[in-house]
Amino acid sequence: MSTGVRSGGRAQIEQRTLRQDRWWLYPAATFVVFTAFVVYATWRAFAGEHYYSAPYLSPFYSPCLTTDCVEGSSDFGQPFSWWQLSPALVILIFPLGFRMSCYYYRKAYYRSFWMSPPACAVAEPHGKYTGERRLPLILNNVHRYFFYAAVVVAAILTFDTVLTFRDENGEWGHMGLGTLVFVANIVLIWGYTLGCHSCRHAVGGRLRHFSKHPVRYRTWTLVSKLNAQHARWAWLSLFSVAIADLYVYLLATGAITDVRFF
Image 1 (cartoon, rainbow, N blue to C red):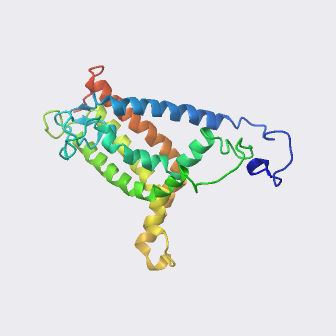
Image 2 (image 1 turned 135 degrees about the vertical axis):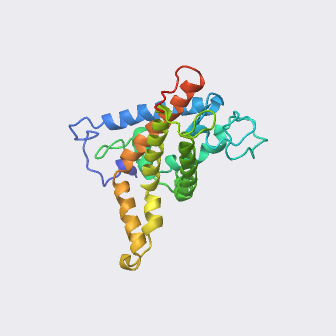
Image 3 (image 1 turned 135 degrees about the horizontal axis):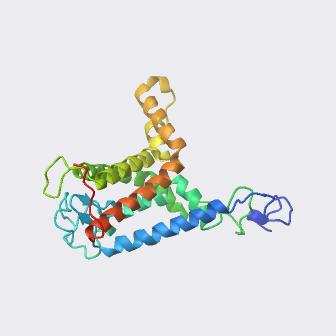
């Protein structure tokens, strides 16, 4: 007996969909942008160089924890002295795992890469649907734990952003274009992280009476506002982290110089 979109319960129509709009634009654009980001991030993660230009440390390499880290980039020590690969590969697993298991990103790459389904009211090509009960999709259920790790990473990136107000000699009072890039990036990262569905559940979930927990209710309300724009935060923070890394790369390679405001 047929299953999935070919089951007897589906309307018996010949067309793949009756939609008349350009429904394919969203999954196609998502596919192109995500692929471009994956290619860029993979190149930068494995490069192992040009990720620090005082006082700016690329968010792809923060915190830098190996003995191969460029001088001045290890603000939290170098406990991974045995690591032989790029320093970025030690830390990127956490923000990557957070984004890959994110509820919004699941929707985006399910539609764009797996066509499951490619859009609302558009039949998917798969013969059956198993949901997230088997490998590898069952691993998405660890999203909440990646959220906790993402909060730690965001806190470290906040620390890095504060350090951008120093000059290359460690003197405070510096502000350059890179400082603004890092400030914008960390605001977007926190907006995306705190707007996460897991964060919303953590601060307000399993409460029977909000009236007995006014602080948690207020927190839940604020997180809910961020959550309503979670897709926007996800896209903007994806762009901002790539832009911040690219800016550091251009500085480190000497392609540009930092614009100083004071």
